[in-house]
Amino acid sequence: MAKIIESIPNISEGRNKEIIEACVDQIRQTTGCTLLDYSSDKSHNRTVITYMGSMEGCEEAGVKLAKKAVELIDLTKHQGEHPRMGCVDVMPFVPIKEATMKDCIELSKKVGKRIAEEAQLPVFLYERSASAPHRENLAKVRKGQFEGMAEKVKDPDWIPDFGGQRIHPTAGVLAVGARPPLIAYNINLGTEDLSIAEKIGKIIREAGGGFKCVKAMGVMLEERNIAQVSINMTDFTVTPLHRVTELVRREAARYGVPVIGTELIGLCPMQALFDAAEYYLQIEDFDASVQVIENHLH
Image (cartoon, one colour):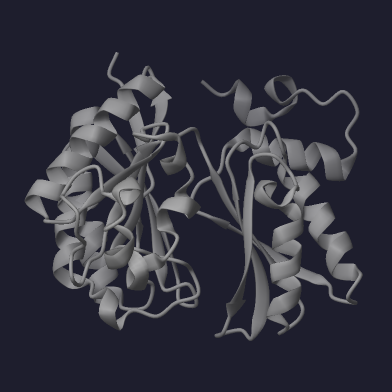
């Protein structure tokens, strides 16, 4: 049976529809992979693309996307709430069916090397593909962002894995790696005070002494004039969605601020939503494999 891989590249464009569609077309037009979803955020000025396919299909799609993004996206003119260091900021590969993490690590290295050679875009390997422990965490790799990356890569500890000790003048650098499934989850607050979202982000993220497998920061959604806690949940089986949501709700309440909505960016494992439903509905002895109708359809 063919190995199936998922990839979730993030491009640093969330406003120009022509550029977004041109980049997404690279996935649509690649044999051996299927576009599942793409979601743009104007405040973040970022688009998250999700596709799935064979190892060969994912490789070709990733390289084609990077080449098109380098051609169309100029980070010297880019502004947005989300940190970024490249026109394609990050490109993770996730094992889905018959594939292993080792397969994804090998694929990430192959794709990274090709992108550096064919798109002239230097590449860092991160997460499970990292060439050193200090490169595993994406936030550490991205620190300094596009504006500070030219200086950062002069440090011997931060020379890109592929592409040499430099950055692309308009496209920056890219992080490519292999990782388990991640949930991009945002919680919107009923306030325009960014400092509240920043304080809550610091409390809930693992690096600040909060929940394991949670990365979070406060951002401002200028278009809606509200603050948001932007969250990456790297393992929902360790820390579930509802646990993070409830702590954010309680912390916000200390400032008299309500949670006014949440967002899922891209795709989410079904079990994560089942876990949230079981918690909020207080269903006793819930068994999704037995009690969900769709699980009986074959």
